[in-house]
Image (cartoon, rainbow, N blue to C red; front, side):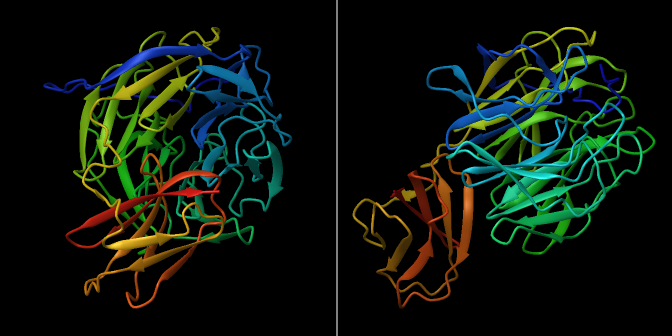
Length: 415
C-alpha cells in the first residue's frame, strides 16, 4: 500500500462546539476492491465513485453510480485512461472531468484530462492540463468553467499555479496563482460563484488549516477564517467533504500526530465562520470519496489506520441547518414581475420584465438544490432577455433575478 504521507486528514479541539447534522449508514459498494485515492462527484441527482487503489496495491479502473432513492450502486463504463489515484475533479452540467493524478505509488504523475458524459455513459480524452504533472491537486467548477491547481509531483515540486478549463473550446487558460503557499493535498469546493481551497501540506510537510476564496470576476484570492483548530499540533490536509447551499462540510482523516479522526466541520461561506458537526461514524479512514446530492452529503470507502482493511461502507450526512432553496425568495406563480417562456424549454429561455427596474440586477440559473450553474448581468429591462440553456440536461431548474433588496425565483423545465 502507498505510505500515507499525503493524507485525508484532520483532528480538532474546540470548547463549546456543537453537532447539528446526523449520520446514517448507507449501502456498501458492490466492488470491495477499491480502498483509497478514489474520485467522487455528483451529477443530476446521482453520485459517482471510482478509480483508486486496492488493498493489494493495485489500481482500479471501475466506476459506479449511486442512486440515493433506492440506496443502490450500478456499475458504469470503466475509466479508459491511465489508471490513477488522487485526480482533481469538477462537474459542469452533465459532464465530469478528471484531471492529473498519480499512476504509480511515488512514481509517475500525469497531465491527462478526461471527460465523463453521464447522459451517454462515455469517456473522452480532452486537452491535457497545461501545468506540470502532479497529483493531489484540487478542482472545482464555477459557471461553465472548471478550475484546477496546486498539487505536487508526489512529495516534490509543490505547486500553487491555477488554470481554467473552457469546455466549449477544449482549452486551458492560466489564472491567478493560488493565494497561499504552494501545497499538495488541499480540498477544493465551489459555492455561489466562488471557489474555495482548504488546507493541505507544503514542501516541508507542514500542515495548514487555512481557507482561501477565489473570485473569478476579479481573478483574485482572499484568505478567509482559519479553522479553529489550526495550531502547531493539529492543522490538516486532504479533508474529505462536499458543498451544500452556502456551506462547506469537511472532515475525517489523520492529524499531524498521525492519529485517525472522525471529526467533521462546517464552514459557512456567508458568515465566514466554522462550526463543529457530528463526527463521522464507523471505522476511522483516509482517502475515501465524498459528494452531495441535494441537501444530503455522502462519504465512504477509504483505508483504515492499519493500511490493510477495505472500507466499502458509505454513510449519509444530513445537515439540519442547510438552506431550503425557496427560503428567502419570492416564488412567483402568477409571473407578476418577470415572465419566463417557453416553459418547458428546449434551447432558448426568454425573460420578460414587466416592471422597469432602475437598479442593477443579476440573473442566476440554478439546479433544484440551489447550486448556481451560470450567472448573467441584466443590461436592459426594455426587451426580453434571451438565455441559451441548451447545455443543460433534462429536468427541473430555478431562475432567479436578484437586485440589491429583492430576489424573485421561478422554476422551469428543460426538455
